[in-house]
Length: 344
Length: 120
Image (cartoon, rainbow over all chains, first blue to last red; front, side, top):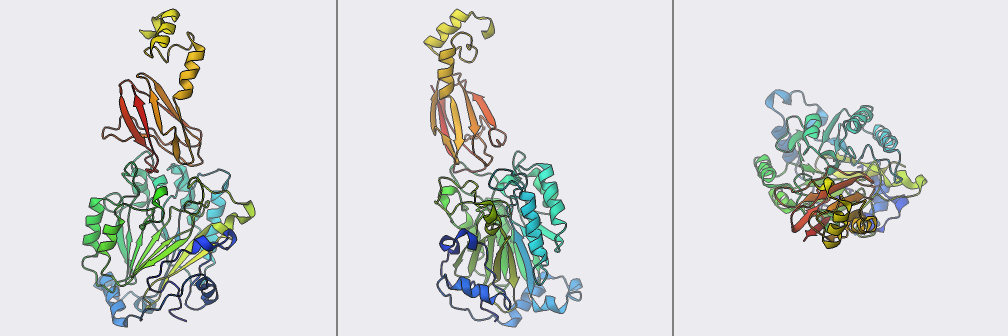
């Protein structure tokens, strides 16, 4: 069933969220084998997207060779060389939030960890796309760290949300999570031939504006990807969406087009964001954009409320609008398979 | 200095203008309340209300966050004439405007939220 992902290339803009009822949110499981049923049920809601041709094997191997130093090549397993990779994205845990929309954000983060631990095929690591804390308090970060320790994947890669850099311009965030990063905390790393780029777009925000990457970070990005082969799969993760979801609510990034221009040459670019507390996706050429659900509370669909504030749903429905995102990279497949699962 | 002026002169100052405002609570309760009601900005539904507030020189403006989400109040000018800490639900921030002028500001967490204080 390889390649049955509805996200597999194409150029059709989809917005799954808008046509869905709250109790259906968050399920977008698109695994090569077991996930087919759910994938098909989702595909029925959207325009069918033509499949791209699989890329030649050698191109993916090229990515692997770029990623590992010679001394580490011998350490890579067969699975490494096959280029298959599974990881999980969580977002917007807002530890410290205690308002009616969810009085127990620690409980729902634990539920997210349980969900991750129950995934078939253990993910190798986690990405947290920001708003770890609600008010940047040390004890909020501590609580999240403690809860995430019980997750099967031990490595977590973070980017900050605006709630993580309050009052101190992100100093505490950098000390906790940004060791070895550049500038305000941006960095890149490689896993099994996939190049991951963590971007920061929550700093130095200007009045009336959106998220901002800034000149220094854009220059770094251009340089970071300059020497990668075009067949290297790219995963970009940042807090605020890197596409214009709903600028009226600040759901976009001022200079994201410049960043995307540097990534144009690549055959497969997956952009993972949080911030808007709901799943949404868009495919534009070789770039697939996804936003993840929050583990804390839902926010309204764009323009469907007076403000983007926390949305109160009946308690029994809360976990159906919270969730995690499971991402799978399958060798030879054009795009990464992205699977959203609710906590219900 | 101001604390030593008489109640009568304070009341007069309040009638004439605003020079004594802020210390005149004993002198003119009704007048002070009236002033206070127009010098508050409520943060509600990710917006400042009123968006534009006109106050006299020397006025103290108080912002109150009524949202479930934290906000800030930060003046837009480069020197950041005023800049609140993060305001959680029901927390307040006050600033006294001693010079006439127009003071645009925004929420540095949600920069789409903007407002303006006109001091004249």
